[in-house]
Length: 304
Ligand code: OOG
Ligand code: NI
Image (cartoon, rainbow, N blue to C red; front, side, top):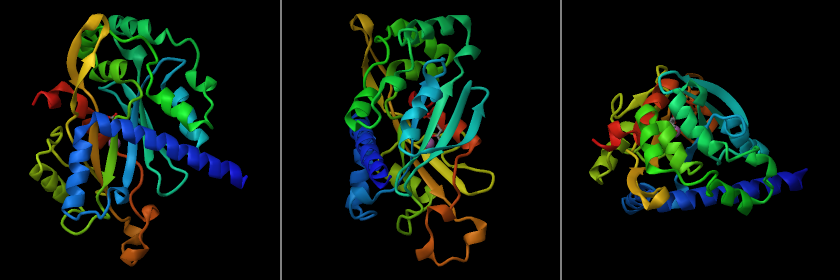
């Protein structure tokens, strides 16, 4: 028993490291922010930055979507938690709590493909129908390198620029997934354990803007849950040069970075600060915050 769980956590490390490596290469803001945190002494080393959560996007078709994707992380000991529904964006999402307190939570969303227009459904299915069975079922989940490879390889043919642009008009989320697939959508820096002056999202936003980072303004730069316990902000996604079918290239949204402040729950307010751990703080997510954070990749933000 002990051996299997040790092996699983080592495999999870390989998968998480692979995700972070490729994501950092695609999102120059990651290095800008981390380097500035180290050079200003906000953290001693980049490794001590706490990753609150990571997020993925999926297409809700029978052989893919959350039901397929979650198999990977359930295998490593993640547990499925609350569901969120985004009516306007036609999305469902769930979050997963990690096996170890040092691992990031995971937020996975799924496009309700069947709620889109016939034309958009046809475009999406012309790609996703190339995947004839659930790809997670043929993966060796105990082989970290195989899973890492899977998360970064095409599931379907390279989309045409015309299909991308047609999807973009109806669902910016659909367009993002048709090109970016399972690439990490964002990682999230926990700010509440940072030194005074940087330990709230409001303060951290000031630091970010001071080093030239552009923040998502949808619903305001600070997104706060009604209970006041979860405060978030996010960068605007970086544009990437995307190669489409037939040699066409477009500049499209890639991934972004998020920041989270989780306040101590009322029942633990009087605990000495050195005793405060993750379980004493507001957990989970907040649909109203998430609804605005999704827009970090939307043209309403990237074209600002
Ligand atoms: C996810 C947006 C929501 C959060 O922490 O609430 C989110 C996405 O853009 O795919 O990350
Ligand atoms: Ni997030």
